[in-house]
Image (cartoon, rainbow, N blue to C red; front, side):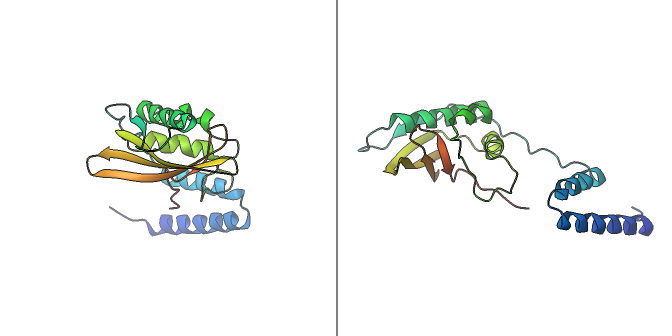
Amino acid sequence: MHLNPTRIARRIVALSMSLAVACASPSAFADFSDWIARLHGASPQTPTAPPPSALAKVSTATGLTADAQVESFLRTLAAAVMARDGSLLVPRLAANYAVEGLPPGARPADVMVQALERMRGPAQIVVESVQATGGLRTVKVRFHFGALDDSLKTLILDPDGNLVASDLFRVNHG
């Protein structure tokens, strides 16, 4: 492969100038990102994960009183993961739904949709605890993916059973 020093120098200068503009104006950062995509080609979309083989079974741990709204939310979540269609969960997101670490201007609902299309599909979802505080419910949920593979997550639901916040996924920066 032959490297053209002039072409490389031009790209470095253009990149430096664009970076200076992006740092000076936050709104210009999107233009800078578009420029990078044009220069190097758009990054490929992360593929949707294959759907789980079966719809996750939702249950409540033994000794815990079942909460109909919590179980309803989790069944909707399981259906969205099974269908690989995160938009099914959007109506169950509270108006103040937030994602920790999300950059300004990004829409939390869009991030949730993308995350649900990519997350592994659990075989079982078990509610382990529900604590009500000030109208919100903090729910500890265990997602079972296999015999020795599970993950404990925390969901915060509003009085209507809609998701306010969770640690279902985290935002990676870079």
